[in-house]
Image 1 (tube, rainbow, N blue to C red):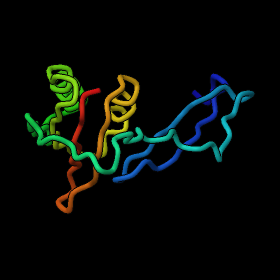
Image 2: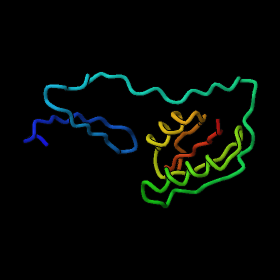
Image 3: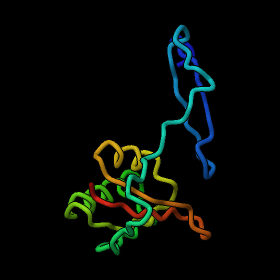
Image 4: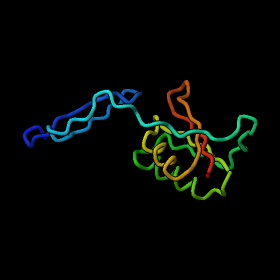
Amino acid sequence: LGNLGFEPAAREIGNGDWEVIFTPADQQPDPVAPEPAPAVDRTPASETWPAPVVELDNRDLEPPEPLVRTLEGVEALSPGQTLVALLPREPIFLLEELQARGHLWRGALEPDGHYRVVIRRG
């Protein structure tokens, strides 16, 4: 891509993974551009989330299968229901897609290295 006039911009996104974006040399991105904001939990603090109706263990699947299976599971829920998905790494693309579809989520890396996310259908 360098021979075609593109410049790379790399950043670590966590868990040993990197994101590399190639842009035309005359359109370099701002190296200090802010990260996209994570989905905001608009649930009032006094409201508890319902217990998950489904738990998906996607830890042994190859991409993009964890994302696909998790989104299919969320779409099968009724509004307000929740599911838990266990994933092999932090699901950056999944979280962006959940936000775009109007769902809420809470997630974190677990001590054993996988990512656990609870998703509430919007």
